Length: 342
Image 1 (cartoon, rainbow, N blue to C red):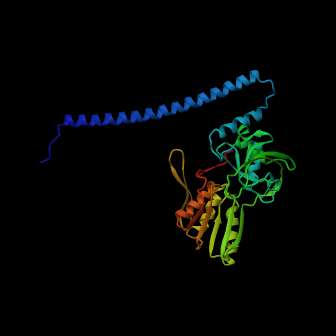
Image 2: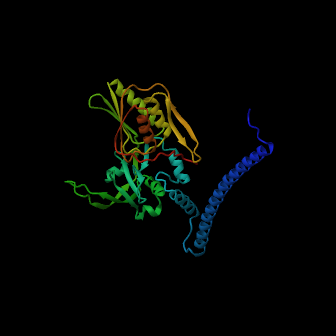
């Protein structure tokens, strides 16, 4: 026969349980509330500091204030303060140029860069036949100034914007370059000044050829909206020539369109999730999947420290799906989803 529990004890136990639950809920709610208050206070302190600077400048500055340039500079500084090596602020004019940059022809210097640990611009890729290549800029160069202004003072994002411009205009790049040495001697750093005349250059994102007789070699330097279709066409042509394997070179790849990268993965991989991302609240969402129509060829992916973003997704998926092997160096580790927000 089961042991009976007096009603009074049962009610007391229920009340204790309810009290504990309410207490835990209250503590959790207060913790979240205090966290939000702290965030609000920090933001208010930031706004107050900016307001004080603005007031002092307007009272004491003897020069003329360009309100638009000042506003753009504040926005660029905010993004730079995040410490995100790929994040940048675009002015309305530069954003319009960005939207129109899907074509292959561009006007500017013709280099791709990443922000190094000192806030300068490390050159990861020089476009073939670009103004930069003709002027003598090389991969591995570190741009520390533009027209005499230090990169760390004008911000990385603004420096990126200044690479493009009107055809025929010039920009003087202050560059640090490790001199080539022999016998494993320690490289000496050279300080150079290179003048580049902005001009038209072709922004090819993909190159392909047959190597070693039967290997399809495809190098992708950036993922643009058209790159997936270019990849499919190039691979089909090389397969017709007898390709028995694929070498996918993603070195010096600055990332780009995740959708384009997913399109390439759809061609190479069996069915499965290829791109998932976690938002700031920890929610995981599947953004892209591949269908069961993979190319039945082994794949080798070549990567290095300048393999960024979408290129890292491609390399990681090929490894995780056991479709091929990775060769080279540790990649940049930039596993973030970038979006252009107007």
